[in-house]
Image (cartoon, rainbow, N blue to C red; front, side):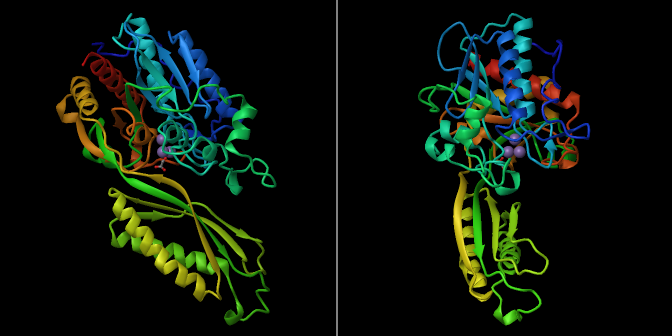
Length: 419
Ligand code: GLV
Ligand code: MN
Ligand code: MN
Ligand code: MN
């Protein structure tokens, strides 16, 4: 086993492609020009580090494969290179891909031969920010989402490059040259296992003074787009009793949905909200908003959804007979991580930081590993997030903690390969 990362590290290599004004910010929306540049870096770098095969599939997922002594499905290290728009941070997703690349570098510099091939995967549109389906292309690979359905997903209005004609996933894959020839299907590109290093994005590891989180599983979640229709009217001349104010209905639904989720010990959030026509003296006639419902148990996510739906209809009706329609955008079940993968991570973490510096935890956020875990043994490794902050340009994990995470990732992959 290689107990330290003595090599020329390239953590910042993709930082120029969408870097924000702060040292740690990044805005690299899925399938934008910066994403294309990061993808090219990924292929060039992994080729130089001994990946003799690159598979690009119809959703732009890219598998960089390093051969082993025997052929067979590779043990994968995967994550994503796209970010939140805010700008988001430079670690969410990016760390997992870079750590995979660094693992390849260590293997090359130490002439490590694995039994089976090893690969690094860059999954397309994990964030679901520009195109509102989270964990999108790994879900297509896993057969949880149809290819045509994914191709047809359109930019959200607020992040559209040209709001008058929002682009689809397929149009943008073509435009940036990453609509690959391989079928996006776990049976065409099978993986032996999937390991993902990720920042925690929450406060637990830092609070507990731990260096590594061994991730046992995560939450289920569902995303919806709600459209509320009212009637545009003059704000000065229209008495309350005559209004159908779509924004009043939206505001009440948002407040109510937080309360309903809270009653079930779950979470419900709205992060997208747009209104029309957007004029001080016109009552909003239309609102488009998101709902993101989460709980460890998918049955409870369903119960929260039902509770919200029941009351939302009545709220819309009571606001002058506003209309309300729902569209399901994402549906992610609570993942089950694999015992052998988890054991490989525990052993690797014990070697890297000692037994007292790692702990078991569950993921609050969704990840590509959730989709991958439905088709191959999989698990995740977390490293601390400073202040628990993520989806924010202040997101930060020290170089030392990133390196420890990469070391644990490499150790887990080599152990799994040998098991
Ligand atoms: C997935 O990226 C999530 O929103 O947790
Ligand atoms: Mn992520
Ligand atoms: Mn994210
Ligand atoms: Mn995510």
